[in-house]
Image (cartoon, rainbow, N blue to C red; front, side, top):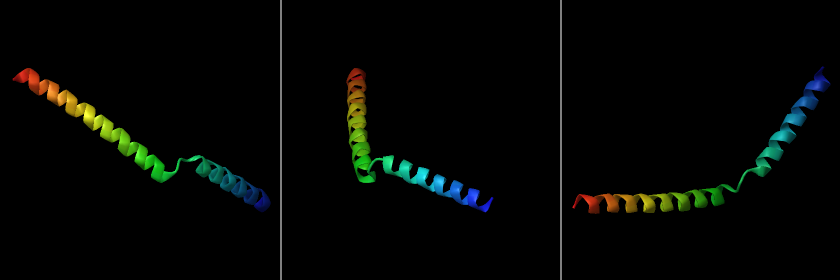
Length: 56
């Protein structure tokens, strides 16, 4: 039973390591998220500007 538990733990650890290797680079992911947020903010500013021009 102890050997089986050790093998299960080893398999779980290997699975976790494989999953971690598939994660994107944190710095690159943060840069991409920031770029997407900047684009979204720009689009939202355009909506605000359009709405403000309609009120005038």
